[in-house]
Length: 186
Length: 441
Image (cartoon, rainbow over all chains, first blue to last red; front, side, top):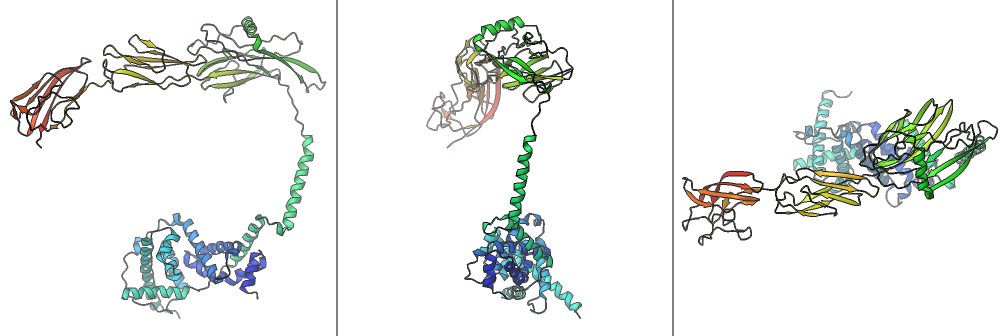
């Protein structure tokens, strides 16, 4: 088993074997990232492939000091943002107002109640703009100002998209919880 | 706050569950990726990684090159027909205003010869030998090609300058074909010009004309309109018992010197204003103005004062160095001339006492006198009434207005009615009624 360092050096020399190893080692993790930014798995795989092409051809950009996995994740997130911009015009028709006013009495979510598959599904069903902001803010940990720059939107847009995304997610999780309580899995 | 805590829990839920979640990609993704990487790396030429593909590509390219080189000597161009290419470049200018570009096609051999003698210094003769490959006997035919340089001929109306060079070289060989079959009513002119062509071949089976401007005709005696300036090579292909003969002639079309002018001032008042004619013509070297009142000028931008009011037709004729001309006439040039009279709807009298009422536009900047703005007014009567219909002011001089006083007393602020009658210099009469508000500071 090669270490990360060996794999990186091999990829820098465009060795096919090293590239294959890198893919085998990190593709599942990166697809997990990509899936959060996509509407479905097919789109996530598209983003994944583009991410790996960037990784293979720009691996020299990795300075070697920071965490390699963090660098990989950053490439994937940036690729997802590019992807989002590219497809933006096709998604413009999505009505966002339907999520604005959501009343909810639920005050807590138990961690183990939802599976990650269910959470992915909930995320995938969000409007793209909400999903981008929610991912970047809540999971990647970027500030609203940074997100606004990345997505080319206003800081306030980022904030309002985030709060609308949360409202939508709460609503969806509530429904899912009701569904699951009524029909518990065997 | 509840809200904040709840939000945090929501974010935490997703972060903890999904931050490092792993999803297995479809097997095809990896395979696809590797293929794409391979393709990209191949296209990205890297000399350090010469592989079998590069060698193969070089081999294929070399073979292809060799094949092309070895096969090219076999591809000798074979002329099936010998074009008898005669160029007659006999330029002449026909007066652009001469509309009698008739299709009269006289035999002008004599004229042409005279013209040729006159321009002898400009005539160049050259010979060329054309090897007739068709017969296979290396039989040579000698053609005399007369290239007549374009001669500048001043516009001569009524004289039809014919460019037709009729076949004169029958003396060379009995089996020679005629050299040029083109007869044209003119070899030039001012655009747009209509030129009649005629095919002089006898007998012929069919003709095809190419006029050099993209136009084409299958008639044997076509008429063609050249509407853009330029030099056009008109080509005639005559098919006569299976033999194709090519003749051509250069037609020179000169641009029309477009006449354009404007008059200032706009809305001029005759005969008061001196009129300036701004010339925007292009491509002309001579200008002929007719101001419509019997006065003419040949200046580029003339000034002119009319003696009396009237509707004049101003005409400009531009003439270019090639003798082409263009004409612009503006009819009833001064029909929209600026005779007008307008009154304000308020004024502020001087409270220090009557000012007399005479004014100039400069002296009455504070609108202390009620008076019109006007142009070209000759006869004038202004009357001003109070609301109860009492006449409080009357003036028969357009330069004399109301200062707001009646019998030495400043009138009360309020609305007053005015009525004006008169006539303009053009003789046109006017009558207007309106009201004006007297204001007080």
